[in-house]
Amino acid sequence: MILSYDRRKALKNIGIGATALAMPGLMSLKPRTTHFISLSFDDGFKKSFLKAAEIYEKHQLKGCFNVLATGHLPSFIEPDEYMLKPLLGDFEVWNELKQRGHEVMPHGFKHANLSKMPFVEAQDLIMRCLDYFKQNLRDFDPKEAIFNFPFNASTPELTAWLPTQVKAFRDMGQGFSNGFNPLPHQGQVKLNCAMGGPDNIDERVQQLIDAFLEGPKGWFIFNTHGLGHEGWGPISADFLDQLLGDLKSRPNVEVLPVGVALNTI
Ligand SMILES: [Zn+2]
Image (cartoon, rainbow, N blue to C red; front, side, top):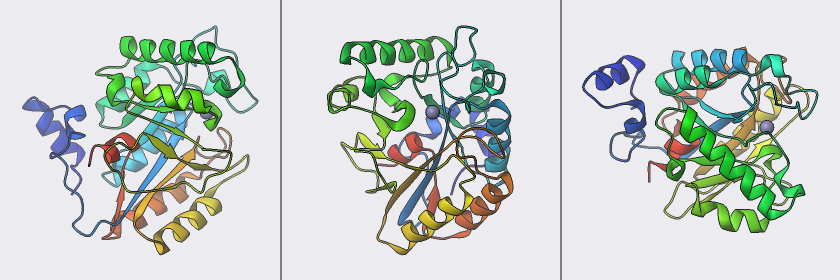
């Protein structure tokens, strides 16, 4: 059972906040769960993320949103033609989403490709990102955080060091991933995701999920971005609604944010 928004509000009233709901022992899974699915929304598109949150709430699920430290600041430089400044939200929105029980995690300081710069420079950007989150996102704890690499691009040196700072990280491994991971387990710090774009990804997501559900138990993580026409590789709102409804009804499937899934260990 996943707690409803009303139930979360009730727990909040007796002093147990949304963060605590992610703690082991406070969330029970469907008894026959064999497959975890996480759709991980990146970059911080305000309109899309608020709409996606509504869709998740309709199905009594929690969304998984990964945002930049500085996407809302005047100094932010758009890294491509998809991540347009007027479309990006700020920490007022991210705190609201977190308050509503959704997961908000770091996706970098300024969406730089950390695999294409010296190690110490990449380290510095990651630390500045985590510091900004500590100062601006309510109840943010780096030791409970999932760091979602911009462009899903990492280096072996960075991924060896990063678990000393955060709980886990998400990237695409060595350039290609179908997003299939083992079920959450102790010591799991590396999470592979699949992605698709630049056009609509509904069909790709459905195909990968179908293939995943036909296979052995595990955890599928897909990195999506905006809804409708926002962002690189957007997903349709109607498709997301229908997909979550379908997955929610399956007795062996749990749809969870990445950090919450790791906390089910
Ligand atoms: Zn991104």
